[in-house]
Amino acid sequence: MTDEQKPDFADIYDRHFARVYNYIRWRVSGTAAAEDAVSRVFERALDAWDAYDPARAPVDAWLFAIARNAVLDHFRAAGRAALPLEAAGDPAGGDAPAGEALERDESLRQLAAALDQLGEREREALALRFGAGMSHGQIAEHLGVEAGNAAVIVHRATARLREVMGKGS
Amino acid sequence: MDDFERRLAEADFSAETRIKAPLRARLTARRRRSHAWVLVPAFALAAGLLLVSHRAPEPATTAYPRGAHGLPVLPGTFPAETAARAPRLFARAEGKVYRSAEGSTTLWSVDGETYALETRRISKDQLFETRTRL
Image (cartoon, rainbow over all chains, first blue to last red; front, side, top):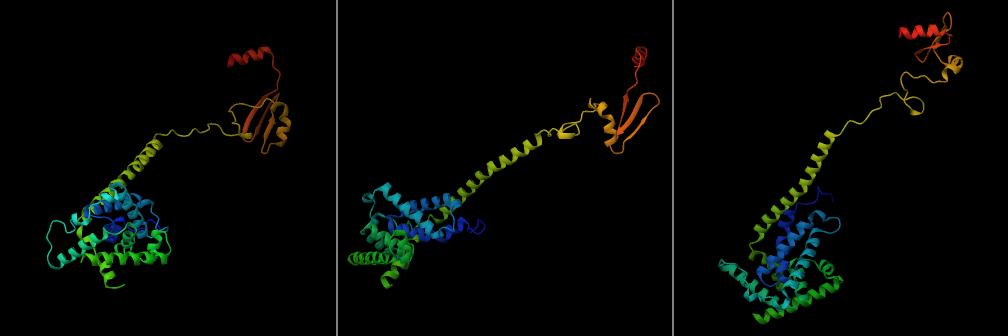
């Protein structure tokens, strides 16, 4: 792919922002921490954009590799044990949503609280599967395991999350 | 994928954040700035090259026509051996025009150049007269 065929960075941002944010939010506790990490992801991506070669890797794989490193940097900087539980977060911002939005936000709050009780490996597998919407094959590439193993890891993590959320509800 | 997994897949945390638009604006501005900085040295280089090319001196040219072996032919000179080789030179030169004048002066032409060869013996008085005329 030539430079003429390379998409504009703004298009990449618009197309992938939600997936990147969701992936990070599944892994990181708290809206503010997720926003910081997402900002870092796209700033790093922008810095590396001119050097990025679409022939070597699809843009989403490239972007999620950056996101994964940004999350690791976040954990290193903050210290996993010092991270706040989601109960202290502000998932809906300042405005008070109503009706369906309230229910949706409450579900997200419960989900975020449940994620905080999972191990890092489980949380990463779920983030790749449900936050980034990846297939088992893509998850396997990110985790450096066989596709079959990736499916097992995701299945176990999902079962664990189901168990935690069942206890909470 | 069961119902629980479907709900997980539909969970969209991105609605909770308001940084999407401001972050996009910040990144766009940053990209514009970085492109501008890339262009500055390119413009400076182009301007420098333009300036140098306008001030560069003309390359030196050879004022003399090139002769054998690339050596310049100095005007008004004549090889010292030509007098001795004159008969052979006459015989070889194409388009030569020569004649023997009355007395001892010979005129000839080689390659469009006309030369006079003084072979007449003159007395000191005649030489003196000549210098006086000069």
